[in-house]
Amino acid sequence: MKINLNENKLEEYDEIFDFIVDNHPDWEKLLTDGHIKIKTNQNKVQFSQIEQILQKFNLRLTDISYSDYYGIVFGIEKLETV
Image 1 (tube, helix red, strand yellow):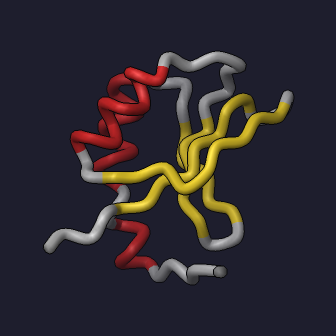
Image 2 (image 1 turned 60 degrees about the vertical axis):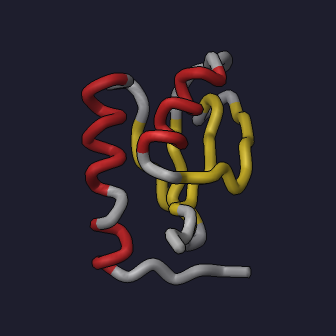
């Protein structure tokens, strides 16, 4: 399922990536096929590092991948609030 993110939807993630830049300056935002991802440039990441971000911003992981070029990439998505 492909999700098209409009500019307002992308802005919802600005606070998350501001926090990431402050706490993990070598991590970046990556947008691929309409999905927002965290690009780490590392081959190992403590899960507690990503878990802190997931809990703080009410996110879930959509996928995790690894490549020599990007390092570990985490797909993220905001959870719906009820």
